Image 1: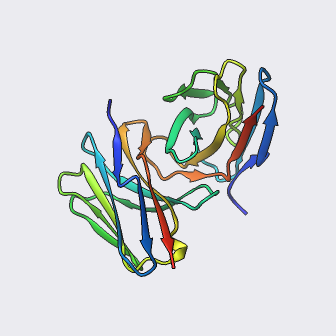
Image 2: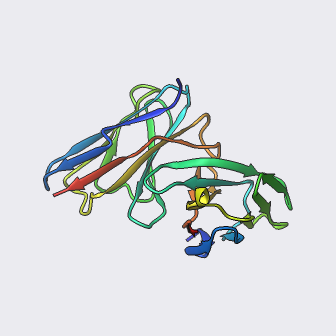
Amino acid sequence: DGGITQSPKYLFRKEGQNVTLSCEQNLNHDAMYWYRQDPGQGLRLIYYSQIVNDFQKGDIAEGYSVSREKKESFPLTVTSAQKNPTAFYLCASSRLAGTDTQYFGPGTRLTVL
Amino acid sequence: GQQVMQIPQYQHVQEGEDFTTYCNSSTTLSNIQWYKQRPGGHPVFLIQLVKSGEVKKQKRLTFQFGEAKKNSSLHITATQTTDVGTYFCAGPIKASKLTFGTGTRLQVTL
């Protein structure tokens, strides 16, 4: 059953701790993306990767880091430098980089206490 | 900066009424995509429009791409409670990635 998985669905952390969100896809897609969504708001791009071992900053990359060591995986680390980390984080992938249709995972709701 | 704006931000309709959301880009787009996000869920791709003036239908949903390829609309005929959610348009403002619109949240009541 192909798709994108994100884990965990809900995550709680104390302020000052780094936390890593998982994103895995078995769609054989080249491109992967991380978005942040705040309540009642749109999608803001954090980082994206067009191919393995390559990634670029999106519109709100400060306080976040990523890696793309495998085609299937694109983990996002929310560091203690991110001032307001509580949000809904969505991972997506597309067959090709650029303007191809994006397929989203179920998301991770991160709450920093 | 270059943006994709949607109006209205929110609309509340009675079941059976029609609904339209409009998407406007600051620049000409090669294509426009529409996504739907149910409450508590994730965005799901609905459709892509590529040609100037293109109109596509999916049951009660009608999608249109403007002649100048800078705007688009989604019209829902006779809304149902299953239409509840936020509708996003998305277009390639920059070559390497999609830019999502601000979204229109639709609430439908009986």
